[in-house]
Length: 88
Image (cartoon, rainbow, N blue to C red; front, side, top):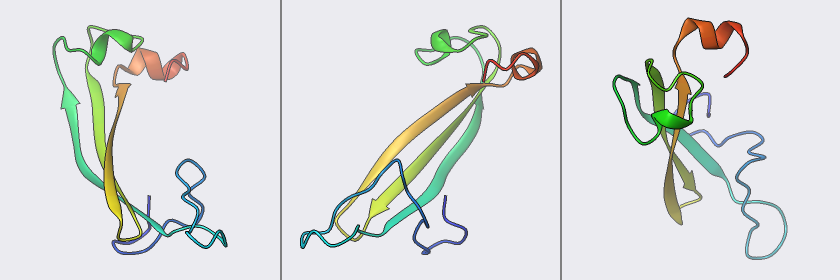
């Protein structure tokens, strides 16, 4: 994530886009749109180590130059036992 709003990510290894002239990469700006705790069953929950426990879901927006913005959701188990055993 960027340190401050409007500041390009320093080294966005996971989302690089080459400039049209082929010399370097476009600036990438990221920010958190939403972060919440999920309770109960759901489509994302069955893939986590503790499918019945709480999960934390973070939705991010990634803006590439001024061309487009993409969104992604990242969910992890919030169960303390999962964190202790390294399941996350």
